[in-house]
Amino acid sequence: MTSKTSVTPSRGRAPQAFTLVETSLSLSVFSIVAWGVLTLLSSSDRLFSTTLSVTEARIDATQILDRIQVELEQAGPATLRIDESSVSHDSITFQVPVIIDSTGVVFGAERFENQIRRTYSDHFIQYLLAPGNDGHYRLFRRILANDGTVVAEDILADDIDRADEEGKGFEIRRDEQLSPNLLVISLRKRLSTGNRQEFFRRQYITVHLRCG
Image (tube, rainbow, N blue to C red):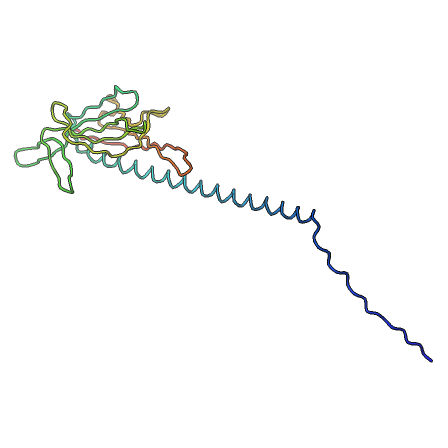
């Protein structure tokens, strides 16, 4: 007789659960990766915010200086006065043509009120800085009477900074000998980002004055 041998099928080993050490190591690796990702996102957000703020400051300063440039290019050279006595900023006073007819040209100042142009014969336009409530400066455009009385004023910017190693907060440079009809004007604008950091942007324009 042939004996029958029973064969019991072998079973695979049951998977073992993670040990405490392996779990702790996995959590540590995950935490490090997550921290790195969060740090990268935070840095990217700060960089974007800073870049946006710098761009906005540059655009604002350019628009302000462009406005000054347009008026100065119309200014009567004989009426232009630059005051450089302040250590923190300069000021500039001048007149522009307000009436041109067959009898000649009348110089003075002009101002737009509710999109309506108002002229001031024999008055002056003045750009200057004055301290604001936060310790920084405001850029003003004023209309002055002949005696220096302020008739009207507008605030063009309220976040202009003081002088730095590059120059004053609002600076006007003119070389009377080499280029008497050329002005270089700079404006140092302050900006703050969401993380309370402060940055500064200096913008320049060159103005070619009328020769006569």
